[in-house]
Length: 98
Image (cartoon, rainbow, N blue to C red; front, side):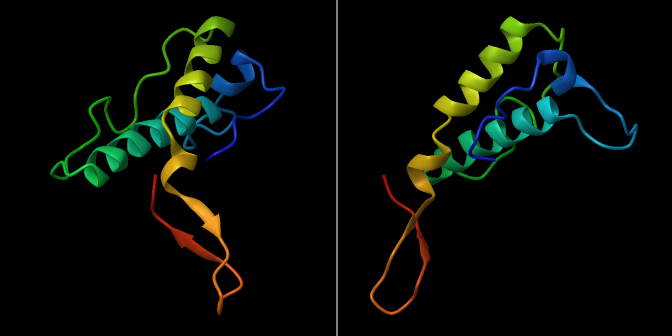
């Protein structure tokens, strides 16, 4: 998830219409945690569980907390290390880099 869902309100993001499925908000927090963990590993740290838990708790579904979660996802740097590039022989390749 590299794009923040536009037009999704906090209550909708926290909703779980299917009991066995994660909410949009939970998935975004999970992706943020693992992006930070991967960034840590690429910086030379040993593999570990994410510092902010694997599936962090959403907590109260307020517009302010949803905006903060979206901002944290944006700041986690997913686009910094995973960027599509063009190579001479392949139409599309993924590279790791800053």
